[in-house]
Length: 199
Image 1 (cartoon, one colour):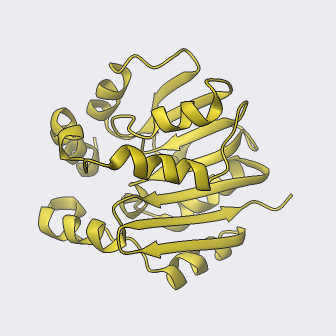
Image 2 (cartoon, helix red, strand yellow):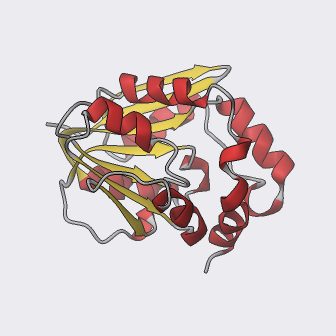
């Protein structure tokens, strides 16, 4: 088990109690700006306790499918205990080494996970492969870039140097990985980066 997986396992039981009071509204905004609708197939990378899934299901009108992956078995156990419907599936997996066919998803969601990727270019390249033509990668941090970076600095341990990149750097990283129509929202308390795979 990686040191990152151990870190998140240790927080799994109390993770949800650490969320902002208005997190649901912020996650709804992430999903709304991602253009998610009924019938889509979605990959939720670093799902954690499944915090994004209710917002996804609402936008999908409970149709389509969600594959939620995480490197932390503890986090997945909490997510699986939440009683999601049968179109939500869970898998212990690392996006940087993910065994899944090309062009499998309409959206790949990376909510509150991007800074923790060990090899960000490898992760982005893999996500690009997994998306269908015209599909979107969505990188979101509903509490904002500076808020995330501060929490990681204060937490120390294996996440101390995990940072959300500023808008120019994120745009550059997505474009190098092959994404087009890149847009980045970097507000004080909301961060969203979206890139499209060419049609």
